[in-house]
Length: 193
Image: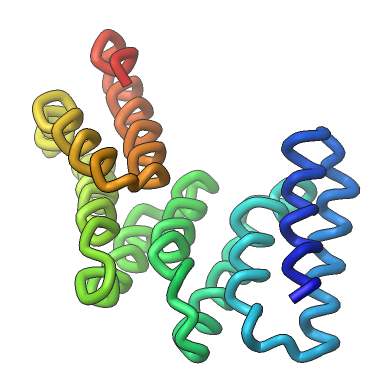
């Protein structure tokens, strides 16, 4: 359990005190200690937190993905599902931010839909919107579909998720909407997010 404190402290040191080198080193220590003591119950959490929040402080964003994939697999193996919906989004999203092929991103993101639909319906809805956004970027003739959705339905979706205290979904949705609206020149609409 103290290994979890290392990864938690790593993220605090980096984000609150701007010491990303020390934060990264503490994150690596958390991974090493967890492996040394065979902390199977924490494998998913440690790898997720390192891959999603710490690793990219010193490494290329693409190197986050193996940690996130490990986290997902460890979560499935151990039944520790708490971070799975976040991981299912983070993997394709990190690929997107890293500029990887949209076909690969869409394929990978779609692979997570069935497990999300079964256990995490709000995250499933979010992943569908993410996939529509990727399709919009992939097929330029479809961009108006997602633009209209962000403009006409966006705040209803945000209100729905806010009412059930899904803050991470709301935050990620706002960032995604803002980016897409901005990319396609809908600056006034983007500023509303």
